[in-house]
Length: 153
Image (tube, rainbow, N blue to C red; front, side, top):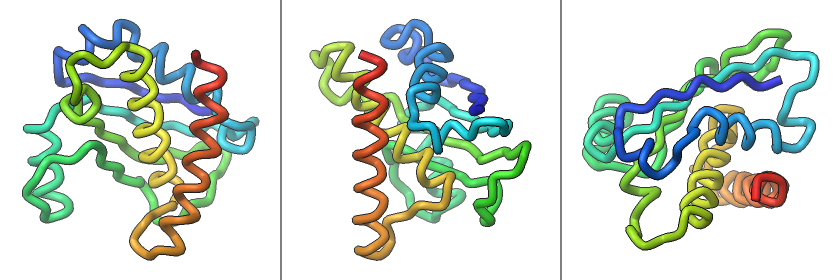
């Protein structure tokens, strides 16, 4: 079972996404069975942030002086899921999710879901540095997204 701790340091998230914790718990509960880790306690933290703060994190931890849509910080390089596992932290920038002020709430939620899944896969050891890894991650991301989006809409 996945347990997600959701924090927000950007007020705009609350205006656009009223029940943040409930939304992300629903996303996690809609993942395919193998990603729900039955009979295990898997925990992750999600910080809903903004461009300014994510830029600082990106500079400090990745030496890239620019904002980005998402950052993922896996807790452990070994990706073995034991009976109790802390996966790590995900940070998502509000401005990247809300690029078009006129986008509907449905489109906004789809964008957040896809971005969250991307970060979640990074916590599980997926990456997109090499082309083969990129293809593998993209395929898995699309499978998870299709599975989740059909259940949360």
